[in-house]
Length: 367
Image (cartoon, rainbow, N blue to C red; front, side, top):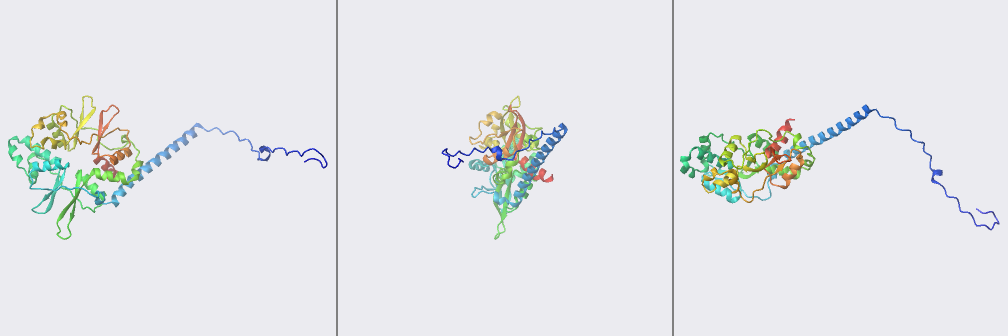
């Protein structure tokens, strides 16, 4: 400020530097050297903590899937509207095949109109048994044309095939129990049978498949997104003694493999083991739909040319693919199995829907 009576203008105040009003900080001492052993131990503890957290999340996800299946019923899996084809056991085998192909289905519940009871499930395995019968007794071809569905059990006894257990469940049973019953009976689908309250007669409600169950889980259980282990780290799938064929293999030889190994498909590979295609048990239906068995002498390559145009294709994965991506594929596509291949396309294994259910419902529950 200027002196009193002075003519000079007042001086502006000098600026205040931040360092004059901030509390001075003492210099930090240099960090103490860390022993290499201590550092390795610390990093090891971090890795262990990360692993335990990962295992904990995996275990919780497995438990979430099982608990979800325990609070849901088989009826919950059914779509809002669906079509159900039921065949009478008095129907000719050849006519039943035409009905399946015409409706684009591969199985149908059987009904005994004489006793008004459920009589089993017709699948592609039944037609393969008829083919086996024809192959063993070609002189009885005329009898085959007169076979009815109620004579399929006689065909099984004639060719020495163990009859498939007729398994069914009530629509309101826990989905968890239905899945375990499917796995223990080695059934890929299971009919839902109810009883009419007034007549006390059985009613076929629908047929539950493994694909519909797993898709139901993939859509409704968000924890499946945390299944981030690769297939190579899981005991899931078949990697040894895999039945294969080539494009030159006769179809009848592939059919013998399907029956002998109790499998639903045979991978088709080239001389280097590269996956080219698969031949499924349902492909057999196309060859015999006209009542002729001559096409059974065709090679696999020739037979695949007769496959319908709506074939869904082959789903492949690698051993490094994670289980969450498998569930994502099931959620978006109609899948029956995954062919496991390496980076060169060579076949390494087969992952079926039964393998996935087995892992979560039987193997995981035991652990």
